[in-house]
Amino acid sequence: MSTALPHTYAIGIEPADIDFMGHVNNANYLKWVQAAVIDHWQRLAPAEAVAGHLWVALKHEITYRKPAFLDDDVIATVLLEKVQGARAFYETIIKRGEDVLAEVKSSWCCLDAETLRPSRLANSVVEHFFPKDGATAA
Image (tube, rainbow, N blue to C red; front, side):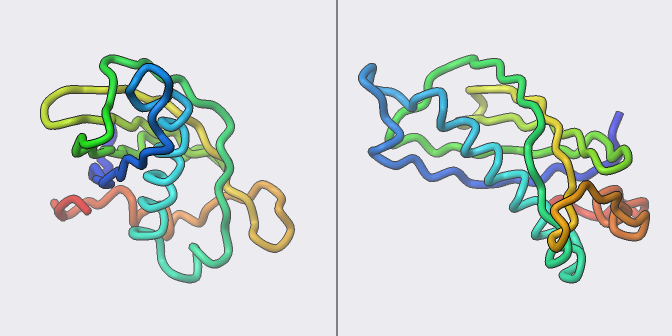
């Protein structure tokens, strides 16, 4: 089990997100997961790490549970499961209240912002995501 703190990210649903069936098109969930994971990185990583690294998605596995609609209040909860080399593994749960709308497992590759080559994160950066002192969630 991960010792990482969950990170919450509020999702705004736009009229353009709604498909012909009257609910959020499934493709938008990828956009939401990317925004939530990047927000997690930007909020918890030191500024110099944020400036020096970029993230690209390698894989997403999405299980859709229930549809989302235009006026829904939706929250993504991001949990960093582990960092291994230049890769990070996340679980993101997208909810409307207590209803789980989607569960997403994803893997990401960290890139050096200058060379655009895979880059391992320093342990001192990774430690920001796995607190040992009972800190609270972001």
